[in-house]
Image (cartoon, rainbow, N blue to C red; front, side, top):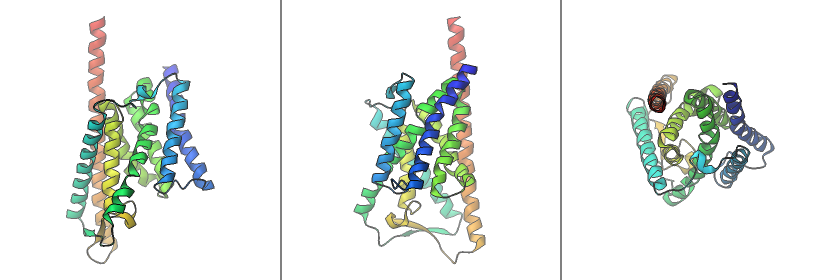
Length: 273
């Protein structure tokens, strides 16, 4: 058990190192990582490079963490994208129906430039999946279990998003909760294609409604009347309830998978005895 714990602690060095690298780049302003485009592409390259180093040290390959192309890769990515788009659309619909927020068309939007800008979300989603659902996640899962992997990487994923300027608590109930969904998606699909598609779709839909950068949005979420503390509180309450529903789903799916795998492993052990 002690060796497994050491392996888990060693694995977690990868995402922590990545976050610290981003901190240095942010404070020195060497690369504009807060913006989409070249900065995001460079950071993705950094994520791949340090993952390559970690794999080399552990005598593993990218294939061992589910990063390889096969016949079903594009299909899994597409299914993940469709599922993510559906989930986000449903959540936005509920928010609009139960609050004073409406979806307003942005007349200044340029469809061509928006679609081109949205391409930036692929390397960003891929980078985050490589770091937070790749080597470290798999290593911790195998050494000390699925729940430690889910919880530790969710906390680090939230901390990573803290670079946006929001509080750690807000990131925990936002990206931190979604990390459980991405994590179980990676484990269940045995690869990164499905969670990358899922992750990208959520970002794309949010970007289309102005939740990433209103300048590149086709629609914007706006209040139908003058904004008051009551209206803001109502929308925030609906948002928190939706996030709690995602949390419950993430917990339920993780525990179901864990128990199911325990049964399979137990049957395998008994049949070999």
